Image 1 (cartoon, rainbow, N blue to C red):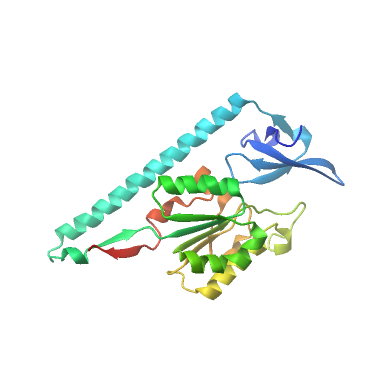
Image 2 (spheres, rainbow, N blue to C red; image 1 turned 90 degrees about the horizontal axis):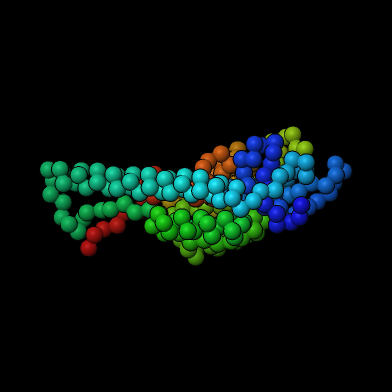
Length: 256
């Protein structure tokens, strides 16, 4: 097997399709570094646990994932229409006559999505567009996010910031609360801390931070919400937060 080959892990019932992105060697021998194709995850495995897959296998997996994506998008759009209809009904049934210019309509907040992986960022931006969300995407490696995030927020003025990329425990780590045992958690935490020093309001600036296997306890303590990418369907695994359009604070606009 070589870098670029598509594989699955036999020990995990071939649940995720990976691309081999690196081959390394340590005291335990040679192991392969893997990157998920449809799921945001970095993993490693020995060659005995890997099995190459063909295009037909990948096509079947893609078909299942795409169906789940489309179904979730459909549910979000329907939910958005229902909420909008209820709001209009409340206004029209109110005994008080409200001048047209004073009618207010909620809108999703402006989103800044900062991602350590350009490939996943591109996938996220496509789905934001499908959902008609106002999102700006920036590809910045995790270690550089803390030094750049505040300037980006000042420039773009988002209501919601998504900070993500890749993360995970280092090999043979046992202390899950030690930040030194995580690949990138400290960078997400520093980014959240810098943002909270700039704007401490949880209403004015909503922050989602973290990636697969991040140290969420410290991210929450720093002032962010957790993404918990690993255990959600593909949309969350891509870093896309579909409920942004309805369940987070919205801005009000006056109809002129």
